[in-house]
Length: 396
Image (cartoon, rainbow, N blue to C red; front, side, top):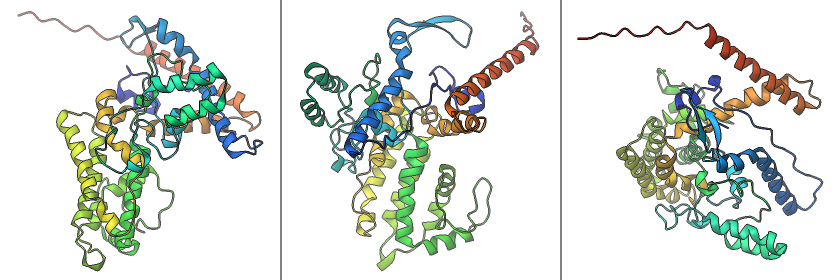
């Protein structure tokens, strides 16, 4: 967890400890439950039960407020709420309770996700109706009617979602964009696979090897066709050279590559525009224009028989970027790259410090002691630093 009033240049550095670990979630798959549907429902309810216990203090603090010292040392009364939920797509689906293959935020039908500007794309789910549907189980204790009511709203029959009692929280509008998993690890990953199919891996690899070494650009000596389990950083490096690789390759059967190049350039423009540290109305309009340009030229992949549909939830979620950036700020405020990096500090290093038996109590104790040491080190740095001399005043 982190708080919004920390400057993002501090939040982006894991060494600054702007994130704190609240707890470890259960990873059990409940294999003793033989019915797969019942097992999925139970695993989902277990996740929400764990999250509800972790976030229980937010209910009272959000309503009644609590005292918190700011960066200037002044203690103020604030009302903390759950404003953003940063997660990858499987966790988003698990959190909001929609089915896999649907948008976690809006009401667009799963068969219309590939369309740009479709009705409902900017209409987020009505949380008041969903909360009323979740109350059906408490009022009637009839699970069949409860399941039918939830199905009518395209949500799963969750018993007690953790966001049900959080004050001033709309979980369907709290889902944030994610540069790492949405853009690089999904949309751009699909684009690269389509390009390989269109031009052939051999030609792509040959051109990759012929590229001259350059500063700040990784040189793929063996090409990109042999890569497996590509990380986000490697996709970032590929995005810097992919347009130069395909700029003059002819398509099969003498087809013109203009539409394909326009589609690739549009996605690259969107990816890099979405990572701007500062946005204006002009840059947000350029973001929408890039997405419109891709949808205007995407049919080239259908004509080449590379894919048949664009109903991808993460590709559809790009239509929400402009609105969510306007509400929550630039994407470097909530990129999952930072929290993924913290898995090393909070999970892997803590696990290595145990004897691998009864690991969770040992991990939490190790983390508690580690945080105390960090706080003491910061206090000693503050205590030993020389006082700041007052500025001299000059009068005319």
